[in-house]
Image (tube, rainbow, N blue to C red; front, side, top):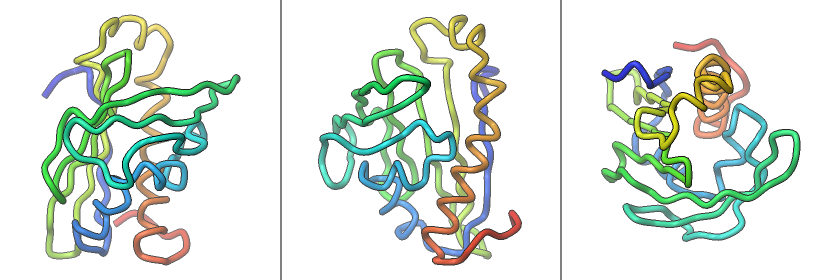
Length: 150
């Protein structure tokens, strides 16, 4: 495991297919984003697959748009995308007795300039954002309000 990955996991009481349908749709990204930076899908397919390109409206202080490409993909198990900086956002889904273990990661081991990401403080900021994303994903896919992590 690379030292340049931060991730968190959560067991969600739903099938991998139900969860994947949300994370593989750019239209759903703003709903599940725990960082508050993802605003809306601008362009892209309804459902992502390997090689899909999509654009998002974002805001971190100032509004901007980012284009991403799906760089890892296994139906109902794994999806990751990267943009110009080449760092990746990844969702891994593993069926477990209680539902699905979802691991969400920020991986800057593939970044063009990993030191910039570190100096900007993203590795320290993202764990809390990732946990909020997983909680929002749980609420959306199960239709339940906030609850404790399993």
